[in-house]
Image (tube, rainbow over all chains, first blue to last red; front, side, top):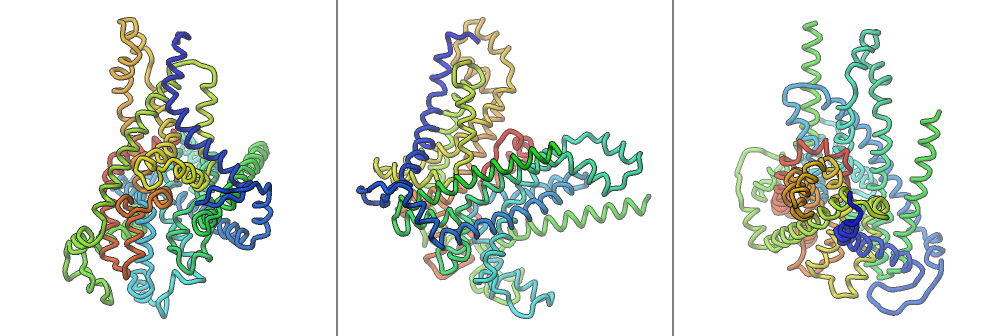
Length: 291
Length: 276
């Protein structure tokens, strides 16, 4: 288009530029700077401490506990999200009466606010009057009500709740891709005598591989940086330690004991971990696709 | 052959029942709980018969700040969507209709923000908003929400604008239309389904958010519903009927919008409308 209008183009993009740089990149830069200081959240004075916050974190058991719990939560919930998401997407790609309705209901948990998901499942899983325990007791599967939100089981319960909330994301992504697979591939395979399983492993899975890799990477980003689920699951109570991940740890450093410098160092570490993960992921991926 | 058809039909029914139970029954239970008087929730075994009442809803409105939270949520989410869509429409038009140095860089920069964890953005945003006295203000949180949701609204709208042919616009220019007229009368009407879908995604993201509201708003008269409902949970002896009636109210707009965009959802996914 006519180059003399380039200025108009820049002017139209100006609000976007201001918002992205003013409210995202500038704060990120500020956060990195904060991580090298001992600034407190509500006090104006501060001093530079260099890498002091990072050195202190590396020696802090709570940091590593949060790190590992974050890994357990992410890996556990992503594995089941992918598995159930794949199964549901394959099923919902078939044609059968009432498919639209079943699809709608299946995708809906993803649209719910996290607070609703957490409160609803705290109620469903509640030990004394919860319907889940009632069903398990009636079926004779357990002899006594299970305390799902106990010290031992809370991580497993949280992984389950995250699975319920987020597996529709995998379903939507895979369904979109499944609809683009050329049906002639299946017809040709059928003529060649390939059974259902063979058609799945030789056609469907390879076609889905790319989108699955992207979905798993995205879900890793989202689950590893999740604040609201671990925070609300324990509601700041005694079990917080059991489910705390790095975002919750950063939050508690910044707003619990008002060490903004340390909190910033935690969130910068979290970002660096994601960068490393992304690089490793794409390396492995390239090797896989070349092989 | 008939046997095979029958077994396929029963497999389909079985699958449907399994998915409907897994995803739907918890939601039905939420509604059921919200309509039950408290004493009936604590009977064992749970019964579907008995009384149904709106008592929990009236208590929620009379005895808690919930109506204030509801109003705050509408104000904050509504203002964010308007601000967001105006900025993103101008930005997307610029990215698809002009050529200038750094355009691709700007587009990629925006996508790059997906790499930052929300907690990494909100902590410094809190510190900075505190400097300018915008903590505990709707203006502050609207600005923060606009910025966090702008990358995906911009990318989504950019994809829509790319799909709109430039020929009609060029014809309009020959007839003497200005850029602004062309944007308002030619591009926007064609992009309207995209703009609506984008608004819905932005609205739901803000409506559902807990983290930003938790950090930026502490005054009970300013809080939005997710934080407000959690406060009700923490401040009372756990009253599931009351809590579930609040949960139902938060869910209703999400459900309405879901019905609007459901058809679009699977298609929109390919365009990067994903977050959370």
